[in-house]
Amino acid sequence: MTVTTAKQHDVKDLALASEGVRRIEWAERTMPVLRTIRERFAKERPLEGLRISACLHVTTETANLMRTLVAGGADVVLCASNPLSTQDDVAAALVEHYDTRTYAINNEDNDTYYAHIMAAVEHRPQITMDDGADVVGILHGDKREYLEGIIGGTEETTTGVIRLRALQAEGKLAFPIVAVNDSMTKHMFDNRYGTGQSTIDGIIRATNVLLAGKNFVVAGYGWCGRGLATRAKGLGANVIVTEIDPLRALEAAMDGFQVMPMAEAAKVGHFFVTATGNKHVLRGEHFELMRDGAILANTGHFNVEIDIPALEEQSTGSTEPRDNIRAYAVSGDRTINLLADGRLINLAAAEGHPASVMDMSFANQALGLEWLLKNRESLDNDVYTVPADIDAEIARLKLESEGFTIDTLTPAQVKYLASWDEGTE
Image 1 (cartoon, rainbow, N blue to C red):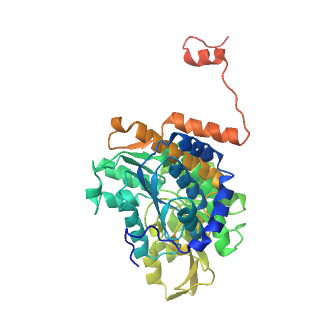
Image 2 (tube, helix red, strand yellow):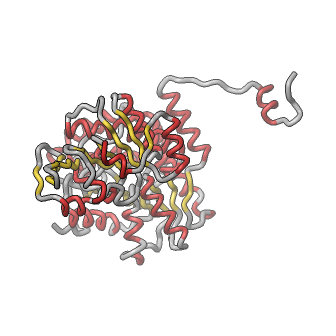
Image 3 (cartoon, rainbow, N blue to C red):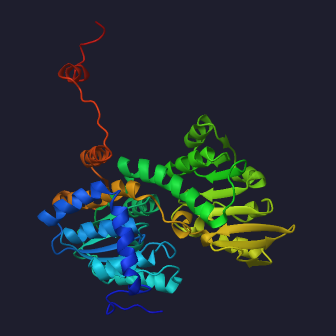
């Protein structure tokens, strides 16, 4: 399938738009911070006339971010950052009702997926908005002639930030990027609570297997791994953590989880979930050790975390016993079950993060972008974190929307914290 810039959109079926609107509006009910920003953007129009190319998961929550950008005056093109994460009714609604050119079809093949990303690149963006740095990667690779005129960009996820920092380290980053993922109100909540809940949701929807009493192996104990391990433990699983970082491994042990190398965990695990941002975390040597019926899933950004070619090479054939499960027959009369082709399980087999969590993540996107535009003249071609005052304001707005209040310091307390000569009384 070929996509050209002459096409104003490429979605599965525009007739799905009304259902998409219904679900987008439902998500908005639990996204009060982003709604507040959208209302202000509609009045102030800080993005007037800017061309924005966004490569994100096309979900109900993302649709509300697109509505915010459009309300701010932006000319937006959206494509999918994962072939299996698109919600087709949402894509249709964005085209029909929310003035967003969208190129995304659930389960699109690789050629279509990359053609859609190219359609976003051909928009000649002044601002990029990535989840995995795909648009930025193409602009720094095959389409370097499009770099002229780009003001900057934002990056949503850990994997993308890793790639961008690598570009920066080599002195090749051509414009400033705001690492939305690094803000506290993003990674501490989205990655921990959002990934933790939605990953379990995707696994259960795909398999309908009971977690209680099972050995649940979590590869990586970053914020995503922490959230996932905690939620699996809450459902009664025996959680095993594999790590390469001694501090994170120690933290996992102190949190009450077993810690061991993957070569040992492979022998005892029932479930294996990768959450590292690296490649071949589960590979041939591990598949050879796994028990019959082992279930593999990935909640990191790219499906390279599981060495699928190695699994296919070791197998004598495969079947599809349920949607989103590929059962591989391997030596020893065993079956190894791969969920959602190794793609993001929470989006491929479920609906991704709850909207209330994405409310903060996408508030960071909107306000991080606004900060970038206001400070563009003073920014170098580096990766920046969302400023702490914006982070704190998002947290304040979220608390306020949830009906929580917090204490404030008294004048005496402010003085005490600022002094050096006060001690015990």
